[in-house]
Length: 343
Image (tube, rainbow, N blue to C red; front, side, top):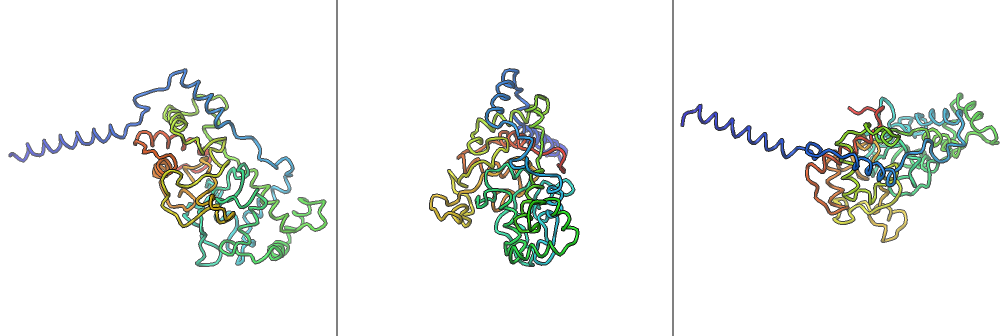
């Protein structure tokens, strides 16, 4: 056969193949637009199921500008680690448009060779969560702030007295603590260190296109994102990811329908020793999920699409089509804070 004929056939086959692949990757939104009635129904469902994020976090009504300023300084204070190498921000990075994480599966500790056992969750919006840590071992931000400082695998300060001593040895903190805790007889205490850090963290509230949509701007979300929200609701993702955080309000088993690959970490069982709590974890918030990879308590999944597939199968028992996954992904990405680094 003439080589030019062969070449023409190969080009034609390649074109057909490319066209087929393009069709397979088309999202549902290219074929269907939401009607005006569907738009109205979707907004009402979103309002009922997710609602809106409060303007302030619980407890912030008692926070003063002085304690917030102190907390911010302490959040970045490396003297709160055993060798002066780490601060809260090291693992929960909020600098340069970061979304309150270090984007590592598990975070290295202050001491060389020490690695945490779970993925560091974002600090953004953390004060809205019903408990803190993946296993819920802390009830609030104040208690949570103490944990990493004293954890031998993390910041590794040996005792609360050592933490107090490290801060008291820095002259500029004396005046800041006096202004922040004017009624306390002893100003620089471990409790007050944690209270100040928590006060700063209560200011870390993110806003997204979804919030503008809920505020009445129907064009804040495009058709893809709205279709994704609709599918998110109809597919059962709202079994766990409800409320204005799209999570963070309940515990759930990781591998509810089909077992999750990691069966070593038993989650809340480590806290309660209750057999029923094996593989139970706090449901992650999906706000800024596009920026807080890798995913899950073990940081085992790097890609958001793969994370969606994993959860659909393990906790809903569903195999999503490519179109369905892409639409849900589009919606989840709309929950990113537009002011953060979305590159």
